[in-house]
Image (cartoon, rainbow, N blue to C red; front, side):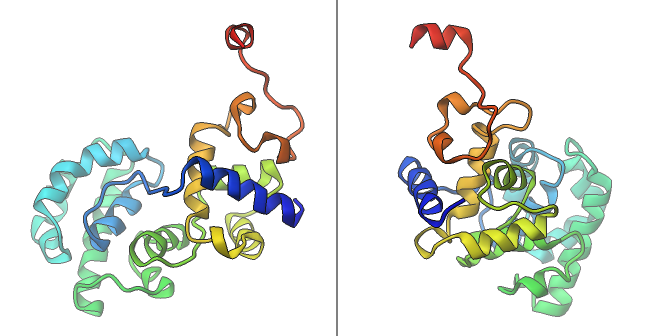
Length: 219
């Protein structure tokens, strides 16, 4: 995608949603780490339902350790892979206490030392909690980057590095949220809704999806 098209691409997404936010609910950086770790192979809606009562009770690593693995499982048992996730959340809480004084570090490499926290989770925390210009490549961003031609790559890291290089300064802070939301609600995996996409003319995806007959007729 040409530089001028990249700028226009982001400008349109920004105009449509000037202040995008993560859809995961969290009251502080620790809760955010937990929520993002729980969101792997789960929906944000499902995670929010599971953590609503949990986060009223647990706001710190110390409180999470006190709750214990069994207690945590009772809160998150509706989430996929909850046994493994519960073990990781307790372990990362213990590590935060032991190595970081109970505080979430504002450093991606340090975050990646926490059990169950990979590069994507670390990037989300750095961006949302600490305002860093990071690009958390999930399945939505991976798809949008490749499909549109904005940032093509065979791995999430390759897409992340290309986004980092291609995304201009005015849009860097919110870029990954715009792309996630665009992939979640418009540029969907099975059938992208090209007919209502505000950046369709800038997109490299050739077999543009037409509007459903009812909508086409109404138009």
